[in-house]
Image 1 (cartoon, rainbow, N blue to C red):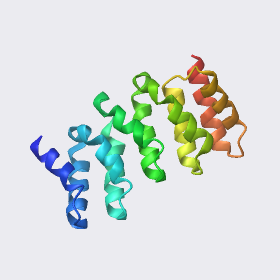
Image 2: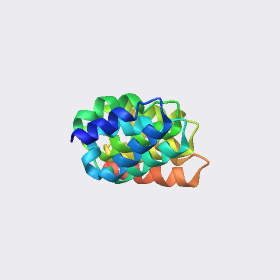
Image 3: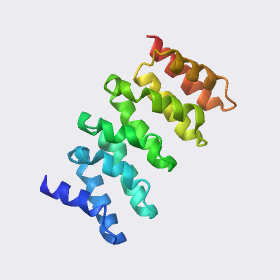
Image 4: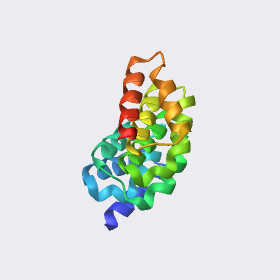
Length: 164
């Protein structure tokens, strides 16, 4: 565990090679790096592509993040960097009903993000948290009428999940 904490601290290093090694090590740590979910999401916004790549690889295999990370993840949902927003939304969606309080941010990103992948992921997450609010259901309905066939399908599936 001490190694994980050191790798998480190293993600903040001004040295690119230190950050890159840390991201790679966290990726290789698998689920043991779960307590660093928020730091890995933030690393998706690193200016160095190699660090972003390792962070994404780590997040793909991370599974459900600890509930203790929810507040920080919630604050990253509306990040201006699309990859950061995408992964914050993804991890909140993985928490399913535990992330219900993230609904306003998810609706915001579904309705206003300029990044199609972020909008799709927000629709997916609204299905996972089983949105039942009029605002959430309306946002999903609007998304089903979007010009993007994939977004429309994801929103339709999310709406169906929310109703069940």
